[in-house]
Length: 156
Image (tube, rainbow, N blue to C red; front, side, top):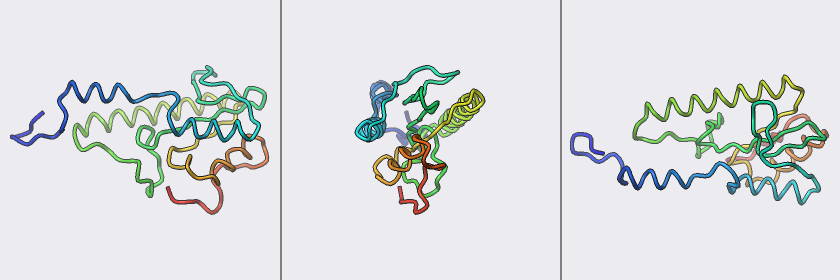
């Protein structure tokens, strides 16, 4: 697309569509990091099982706990230091609306799960490379800690 002779995207619409089709919602690298860590720690879970009106990434039925592994860009990581939370420079109105709808859906799902008595944990993509965050998540799922963010928060 061009805007007064300036190309705003380096890819054609067909190429952009093909690239966006490769973005997965399951079995992403951050999700696999969390799954491997928790499984190696002895926790067993169900994948993408419907609970209430949501499909969390990991479900621990016996513990009444669910884990969402959120991509920082898609779910708008609220940490201002997160370098992964960015907005594309083209079609800003479209992306702003899309991201706002994602955040609103996340809030509805979290509220519905908590209303049904589930413990809900969210770990962000940038946190999945930090062992301290994964350990905090493990302890929180096991009921040995209240928060999943350690006191000494590592940078994204």
